[in-house]
Amino acid sequence: MTASRPFFSFSAVAKTTLAAAVVFILAACSTGGGLYGAIPGDNRPHKGVDRARNMPIQGIDVARYQENVDFQAAFGAGIHFVFMKATEGKDYVDPNFRVNWERARQSGMPRGAYHFMTWCSLASEQAAWFVANVPNDPDALPPVLDLEWNNHSSCKVKPSRADALEKIRVMLDAMERHTGKLPIIYTDMNFHRDILEGEYFPNAFWLRSTAAEPHERYNNRTWTFWQWTQTGVVRGVRGEVDRNAFYGNQNDWLTFLSTGCDPRAIAALLPTGRCGYAK
Image (cartoon, rainbow, N blue to C red; front, side):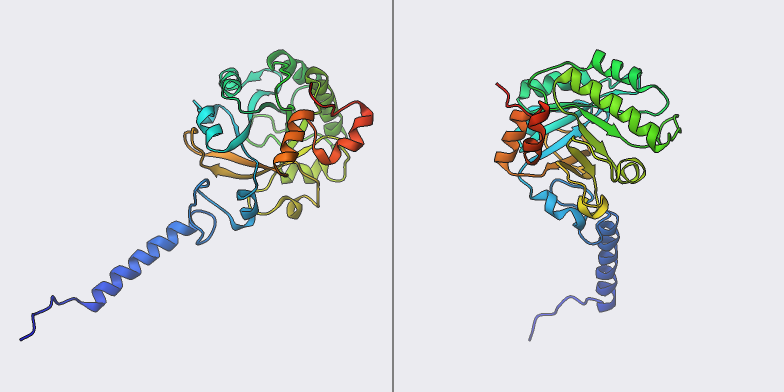
């Protein structure tokens, strides 16, 4: 005689399997990357930025939302740089800036400060505020001017293109004079389209593009840094964090660290007195 086997209802098994598959698909789709699913380093990956994940020089940007960042752990995990929020408008300092600035320095991670530009106060006031609150550290990365529309603040003003460009240039000039380094321009697609597209700046650009490569969204604007996700996962950072990539290889990165300039622009900028190698 053969041993008896447990009786299974095929329809019940099929229903259970189908239900599990539906749950998986819905969970995967909720990541924003279709069936891509979460991957190491990004909670909501998008296939359009796959190339960024494998670029050799990776970084993060932080503000008060990341709370107590362990820069030593992040640096040890392969994060090469950090940009941190310092100031906004004419009277706001990120409450974590000074602690972040010192902890990043102690960890050995290259770090830079950024100013979030607002459109409801004078550029001269914002420049004075930045100068008063951001140290002029010779070992720091170039400062960053964050240019976006202030959609999530009480300031809803949208200046004309000419007025915005005038304010931007005042701010960039003040930041360069204060630090001795050519500032980096950070921007998103909307602000670039409305104000910056077609406009020449000697500055390096840091572009936000979380669903496609920057050249697909910014009409081939040359970029030095690429913010490729806002749902990054990095050792030493609690919760999600913006992740960024530098355009080049290790040698390009070392040149950037030594000069404060995109290596591709050094020949053109040297006659202006910029991009000299650090002593």
